[in-house]
Length: 238
View (spheres, rainbow, N blue to C red):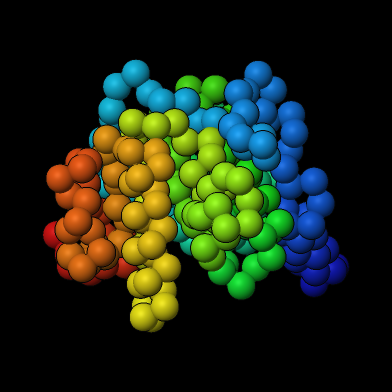
């Protein structure tokens, strides 16, 4: 009987994770009352009245290991790890209320169809908007995939930057994004486009912060660097 129960629970978990990707993961009820940006109607995460700088960034799966309300919760993990947040965001309202949240890092693979990259940008902002309305301090994570998301070569607007207000605080992540020469070129090009498009005043950087990529912009905004979780737990990159 126990084996049957375990199998049923495993199947339920797989179904939930599959639902997060293939069913109505956009949760339209989450954006009730939102303002929308651009032709594509990406929900806007509002600029805060004041900047609240986290003391560190903990992954969602490790969020209970550090008892500090000034520690931000980030989602720089494989999407299935935080699938339940995508499926049942209301379940986390009480936990996230009053906390600093980096909006969800829904994957934007450069090889993905543009429609998928747009959808995951939408979900990033929709969930961020929702948690902002319940009292979380939400910092928009700005992600770009291939050049179609950060240029106007195909669409009339730069999708990656929709839903983030200008002259505000944003987060970016180099974690896993600067491993190859092509990765670095795409990240550098996207960062340049972000700085020109939304002109942020504060930029939270999760992961390495190579001089070759970031130095040209250090006089244009306040950059605040946090090492990735693994590096931090091993005492590196302080």
